[in-house]
Image (tube, rainbow, N blue to C red; front, side, top):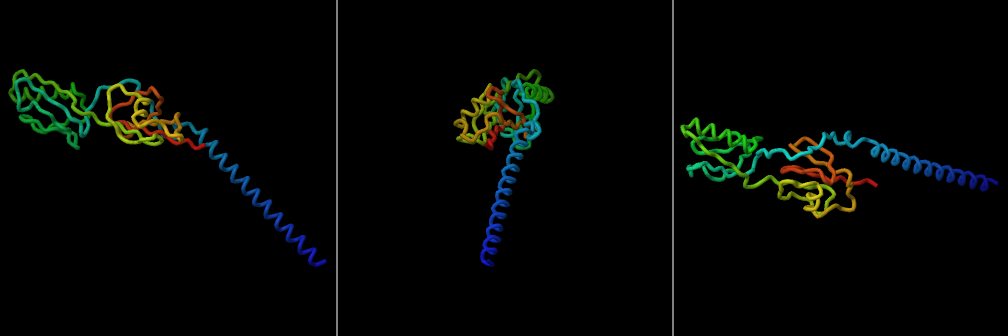
Amino acid sequence: MKKITQSLQKKQTLTFFASYQRLLIRASILSLFAILVYGCATPITDKYNLVPPRSTYPAYTLKANDQVRISVYENAEISQEYTVAQEGTISLPLIGRIPVADLSLSLLEESITQKLRDNLIADPKVSIELVTLRHLCVLGEVRSPGCFPYQHGMTISEAIALASGFTYRAEKNEIIITWDNENKSLASSNTPVFSGDIIEVMERHF
């Protein structure tokens, strides 16, 4: 009789632990489901602190490592190529070091023209053209992430193509562009991209 009682108690104990394990598994599944639902329900603008995307191609502004060709009519000394230094300046004969970061080419032309006038050149004729542009970078769930040469007028779909397309894990509705080092925007396939942009394709979770 004692053995039968012990056997029943052991069986009841095993049954209790099995039920407890099933409850834990169910609780874990429900918790995971809740996390997934909450993550999906959270607006993407809240998840990434997004700002509205740029809808047009703005005038190109200079940054460090950009290379420009400055031509001054009948002045071979100044007429040459210059690279923007890390501190955002270039150094020109007759003028010295001047700040150029965040200037468009037309504004830089105006600045150099005025400085040449101040140095007794009566009617300087200045023209500036870009020699090299900053690259754009495509990261995240693409087959060949990296940085690529930029061409004016590019869109997200063209930038993704440079990186050999999406991986199978890509969340194609969550493509984030970081621009000016801090602004983030949600992008679609036809969103314009700009020199210096960082494009990140997010990973889908299920």
